[in-house]
Length: 94
Image (cartoon, rainbow, N blue to C red; front, side, top):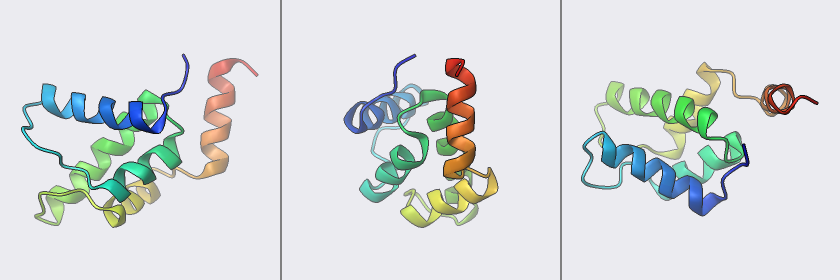
């Protein structure tokens, strides 16, 4: 599967939130940029990081996902650049 662009990733995230019943944007711009930077537009990884980021937002009793929350969530699920590259290469069969 091809990776999404930054714009497509943002649209994808908002679409998933709309399906879940959201009526407004939940991720701020810097959070969306960080998700794209860490997930490289891979929908499965984007879903995982968004889920953890939303949990961090809930725990902090907030309504907006910030850059800080995405970074914290990323640490929890060990989204290092090295691990992402390994995951990506495994799935493309390289």
